[in-house]
Length: 453
Ligand SMILES: Cc1cc2nc3c(=O)[nH]c(=O)nc-3n(C[C@H](O)[C@H](O)[C@H](O)COP(=O)(O)OP(=O)(O)OC[C@H]3O[C@@H](n4cnc5c(N)ncnc54)[C@H](O)[C@@H]3O)c2cc1C
Image (cartoon, rainbow, N blue to C red):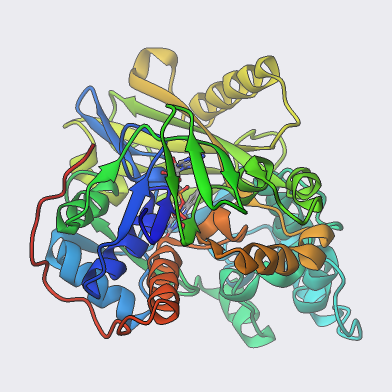
């Protein structure tokens, strides 16, 4: 029996495996339900275009993450790109972030945002929800034109029931000086995503393809869990195989994990699984036979009449992803998980494609290639239930040596950087518990088998 079982070969699971191996620990097995590793970091080639499972851009703010990427994938293989994104509102495009770039908006919007900011509800001591948080830090106008409609769209969830705890670095705060300055002249280079890296070739999956060969142990693909017995510490897979563990690292969605546990002393686990809310994303990827269909790299669409919340333009992010003389987009529409029938999702897809063509002034005849993906887990919803119960749930799992980590394992809003750091952290914790030497830094691989089973 392996000491450690890892579930899921997305970036988090691969990072856990990588860091175990870097410390000279190989007594683990990594299982993945798909026939290919990568999770959300997969890419695909179609008719001369490369698409991701929706746009994935690399933001590096952590030194270790930079070292990790340099060691595994070599940053020379990436382009470093300054952000050029905007907000499409009232048929006008202005720079992102909205709160610092009122320049170019109608005078009435500028007035409402400024007036709202000056008179914002600063007296609200601790905002109870995202709605109040916006009123406290940005005021009514910014809420009305961007934050409320955009957040409701991306999460398909009421902003008055949404907790503000996820905002942190994701929503840059501002001052009156910055707002006034931004109303006179656009201010770029603001926020956590003001610049980014993207692989020169192969889409975001390039990273995964560089990590896998550095692993000595094989990956067990086509292994989807069916049940996880927390007492006998045994994972059963749909294909009839099983594996027992001393420590389980799971990166599968927490709600699925809780549904699949058996013999849990905490009978609430199964009930809890249905309380964890999440938005899925319909991701449409289209190649067009026209060049330069947009100037920005991506645009946010807060208005209801657009079924999508964002359109990204590959030709402005990475021209090698796009066939010569063409353009390509990724579009994203969200829906609350479990709230839509297949037919309703098809309708959403249909409406979104129609509206994308209309707004880009293109027709179906311009389409060279298209593929629509349904990402069932995309955005975790920070509602009150999550706020009260999540940490307790994760702690209960921990009592059974079950480490649920990553964006969906820990049920959080997080990036690729955090996925790598989460994998590293759990490897260090487990190695400490097992009495192994802690990891100091990544080193060049000893062997490069990268077997995939
Ligand atoms: C719409 C969207 C846009 C994003 N854009 C960015 C971005 O621009 N920049 C950025 O840094 N981050 C971005 N992210 C976040 C990024 O995708 C995640 O942080 C990261 O991919 C999480 O990796 P993970 O391994 O934790 O999860 P996943 O990639 O979901 O991997 C989990 C793995 O577990 C496997 N699995 C699931 N269930 C089972 C099971 N029952 N049995 C076995 N295996 C199973 C899955 O197949 C998958 O391979 C974005 C996310 C979304 C949803």
